[in-house]
Structures are given as C-alpha cells and as structure tokens.
Image (cartoon, rainbow, N blue to C red):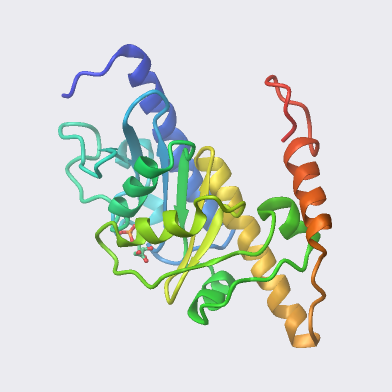
Length: 237
Ligand SMILES: O=C(CO)[C@@H](O)[C@H](O)COP(=O)(O)O
C-alpha cells in the first residue's frame, strides 16, 4: 500500500465518498445512460484525484470502487479499486488538474440537449438570466478530440482558460464541466443541460433575444458573490 500521511488518507476517503455519491446524482438528474459519463474530484493538499472505473454500472459504484490516480493519470497501485481500469477520460481529467490548479472537480456526460448542441458545434448563446448567473455568458464549443489520451483535456483547457463558463461543448462528443470541487462541477453539468434544453425550445418558437453584456456582467457578479446564504468564508453560494 502506498504510504500517505494521516491527513491525506482522510482527504482521500472524503473525496472517494463524495465522487461515488455524485455519480448517483448524474443518474438522478437524468444526465447519463448505461455506463456513459464520469465524475472526478481532486484530493485537496495532494497531487491526486479520484475517478470512476471504466464501463462499470452506476449501481455498482461505491467509495471503494473509485480509483485513485496521480495527476499524470496513473492509477496508484495497491489502493482500493486499483485492480480495475480507470475511466476512458482519465488522461483528460488529469490534464485539466495539472493545467488548472484552481479546478477541484471535472464532469463529463452525454446529456441529451447539451450533446445535441455539441453535435452541431454551436455555442449556446447567453439568452437566459440563468445562463448569465451560472456561466457568465455563452457556453463555448471545444475542438473535436480523440478519446483516450489528453487531447480532450487540451481542448477543455484551451477553451475554458480565461473564460467565465465552467462548461464546454466538445464537438461531436458532449459536455465537460469543471468546478472548484466535484459537486460544483456536477452542479454545472445539471445547470448546463437545463439551459441547453430551454434555449433549444426557445429557438423552436423564434429567435431568442440576447442579453446586454453589461447586464450579463451584473447578473454573474450578483449570483457569484451575493446569491444564497453566507458561508463561513464570508462569500455567498
Ligand atoms: O464518452 C466517453 C468517453 O469520452 C465516456 O463518457 C464513456 O461513455 C464512459 O466512459 P468510462 O468513464 O466508463 O470509461
């Protein structure tokens, strides 16, 4: 067994629990079918993250079946779950964690409406206050990228670095979302599918009206800094 400090062991156990539970949240929110999609979470204070095994039924995912990986995307040997192959998107998640230290969670789904926009390689325009709140503007499109190596990760980072959106529509594939932790990235995946569906329906009825950039900025600032309940850190969520 690889030796970790007691603090790191506690952090790994907490992220295993969280990432396992969040996979159930993808199912509950109707964002995945069969074994598609994946969630990962960075282990705070360590160059490690936790991700699901590849191609395993969501019903069979629990904390001990989550796989601990290094930020190079290598499975940490002799740890719970290490006898299985990690998610096909492990190299992509690892690339994001290496390149974006502020990111603590990554999620991929093939949720229907967001993936339909990705199939057309069309950015979702910011025509809803909910989009301005959550994403601060349009949802951008990332490049077509082959599954299995870090090409997807490069596409995610190249598209989202310096962008307010926590979601990218990878062309012909589907959405990837990032967040300050795994839960935040799952929230972005849920919100993305909601706005992708609403904007799609709006377009069946006519041309949705754009929101002025200054109003988008104001909505984003309020939602990120004032909305919700104060936290112990003083910021609102
Ligand atoms: O689309 C892809 C590959 O990018 C995945 O979402 C698969 O559908 C699920 O892969 P695993 O995480 O089970 O390997």
